[in-house]
Length: 322
Image (cartoon, rainbow, N blue to C red):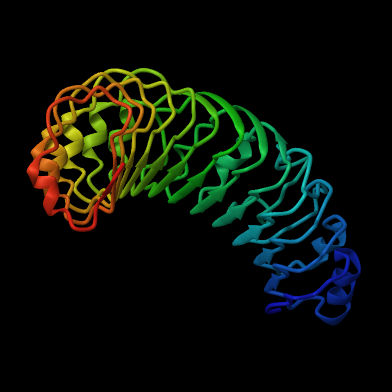
């Protein structure tokens, strides 16, 4: 089955029609962006050949199906932007949030974002060894950050805007390119973050992370977006961050950091947006920032900076300082 978008009816009768017309041949079911309501029917389990199910951007309610015979699909299952409630079923054998056939956990794309799902992230998620994309953001999830180190294929992990707490594990998927944990109650960043050399986007804004920015973060030379604003980080800005020459956005807003702005920031020649506002920065503005010819916004207001504005900043034609 291809796209069946732009429909407006409850989900159950639609599935019944599909079962009559296409009992064994539905490889992909796309019902995104309709006005579909009701819950996800257990009868969808009869669509045994389904590899992809997309139910995003509807008005679907109720909990995720819990029948042990239910098979959502083998590759992709997405229900973002609905009104799903309840927990993510925790048991492969008894609660069967089955995105697999038998014991073969081969799902690659799992998106449950922007719902009302509660409870903790179940251990079964760490068994989805083929997973590349996992988005559980914008829910009501609680508990600790599950150890997802075994997920060697995972590239994008979004847990932002939940109620998760504790430490971010030292064991993280080795090939992560994006990690977003904004708006949670996490308390620390492990030094092992420096091993994630494929990481392009790291965001931990508005969390309870304490301590200092790990110097190992400077090893992330592929990083383009780094957002740590409104955390409880202290100490100084590591000079090692000057190695992150692909950075386009750096957000350290409202950190209680008492240090100078590193002259090494002049190496960040791809920088477009730099937010260093409402910190406790001291010393003078480095003239080396004049090398940031691609910058459109540099914010350094509400600090304890002294001296004069370097003449070199006058050559930054795209800049808007505030």
